[in-house]
Image (tube, rainbow, N blue to C red; front, side):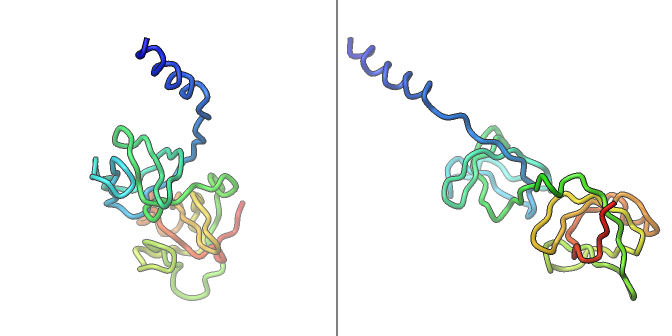
Length: 156
């Protein structure tokens, strides 16, 4: 009888639990640790920029199904904005030199883009866009990803 009484509230609460909202985020600062609890033991380390699915937020941590399920700190991810994702743009308005492709918004330059380079916008954060270079006159950067000042991008 005692087993039955304990099982009913647990089963009932599982049925009443709301479905978790799901979003896609990009790991922006590898290596990034996934932990068993917020600030807990490390389950695994994500060693490259990848898209992950995140569900609920607990303080500064998001639950993800990466590594079999665990928590990743909000500083390690950026959400992909639905309005910006998938848009293509052309680099324009560079009068001298190149547009810096950066490791982080206003961070160190990792490559340079020329006027006419085409990028796919993966995320927007203020006046910064996280992009993947698709094509253009500077073919050495095709496929590279990074942050650029969106002032120099023209959507098409």
